[in-house]
Image (cartoon, rainbow, N blue to C red):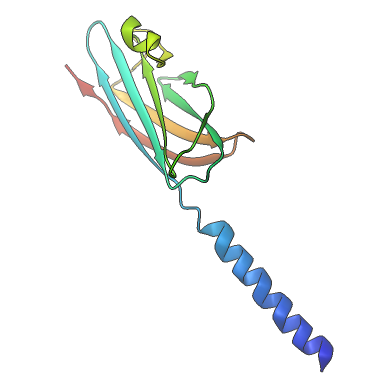
Length: 126
């Protein structure tokens, strides 16, 4: 009897642990804009644990990787820009023609380079 009860308790503990691990439901919102002289991308993660993350923006086979940031209040925001003023303010530098074909994929990755969330969007073109 004792081993049967132990098996049930252990099974319940494993199931609960699985639910806790799965409860980190990270999501990402990607916004981008392309003009004749500028590319601008924002990759904003939410539902993140208070850990370090970085973002990767990819367009037309070209990728840029941000510096790591620690999520605060479940959120981490990453900007990529070709505008020097925004780069000086902390945006990851990209070229003015970084956005190719009007489409960008943004990913949020943890410190082990595991993708926690990703999204592909069409960019606003002006």
